[in-house]
Length: 284
Length: 317
Image: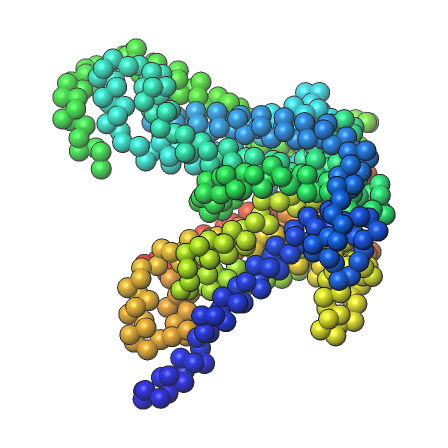
């Protein structure tokens, strides 16, 4: 191949770096666009919220819509419910996954392989498929339309268990052996040697649980029938239903409020979040 | 790796193990007890909230039950009914169409962006792009669909206004049977592509630099290099991304529920929406379970197909 044709083919098939970066910037803008629009519209007056082209920087920024949300729905109650549900599930999953992951990685007992197989197999079962019997089980326990009905079934986490098992397997075995020689029993070996090293793995489990359950909609929609037990996404969807298209900016102010904790976790915990999402594939 | 060190650390251990032990030692019993305690929350939870419900779904699908009266045995009636129920059939067709288009679009966008981000650029810029594409994943699908409902509004939505700038007439996104599914797919892909993107970025990082350099020396550049060198090496990631994408897409619910509530007509009604409506709005628990069982079989089939395909087409280095 002559030098000339080589250059020609190069020109045809490779984008100039600036063109590639410009293309990426446009895509990034399209990706963030709806979020930017949401924030800016929530800060405009209801009258301005229909304006096209949208004023990305509001001419007279106002937090009127945010007051409106607090007037129209009990944001504090929704936020409290969401926080309770999400925090308890995250802590619960860190405990169950940490303990079970350690047992599968470091303890010897009968039926270890089939039990671990059972845990792995449940990762493939979509929640939507089993929701009818899950609802009936919760009903028989008297847990429908309670926050506990959302929390308790979410404690066992197949993926979290899998992740923590990998995490404990990655720790040197000698540590435990040394502790045993020093006279530590199995519990002390776990408590004082391995558990303190597990924090980064537990952080992944916790951050993933937070992200998933803070945004969860399907289970709350089915389980929570009275408004006092609604979580934020449920409250927002019903807020939109009540208002129709009357005051966009009020609904969007609610959306922005509900995004704040998720964004905070995104900023603080982006690395565990990314690692968690990519290491599993199945993010539940 | 660590096994080689064990004899050095505890020389007497083999002797202790060789001794005939009709009863397990105190340490062994302690370990087993601890294991049982550690596993109990997870295993008991999984049995109650996953294993029993799977069996329950199958059993329920053989009964007629409205929760109030006592259940009556129906045999295969629910399945026969399902095959003749046009709403159920349409929901499966919609879900499959949605799955094919959404996953294809999602993978295409994610792969293109991952390759572009992988090219030469300042480190800070790369992390800005990476965060931007990943961002929609952290939002609630339900709340963001509320936002999207405004953006896709035919008369005052930003989407139609932008299209108007390039001379395209307003599209009745959410109110026409022809375009409602397109809107649902776009909203879904907008939120989900970041997931495949992250997988691809990770996969690309795992390809050794020397392979790219060798390919460039052989004269492969740009698109051709990607098609003949990068893609085959990325095939394990591609498989994972498509399987997870497919399984997630089969369960789509929030977007059509909020954007269109399944309409206009049944044009965006998905399988999970039918499960929800049949069980919790019409109180037909048996029929809903039958639909659930069929969806479960579909998901399992995809998973099984994954394992077969991966043996055939995936190139491991």
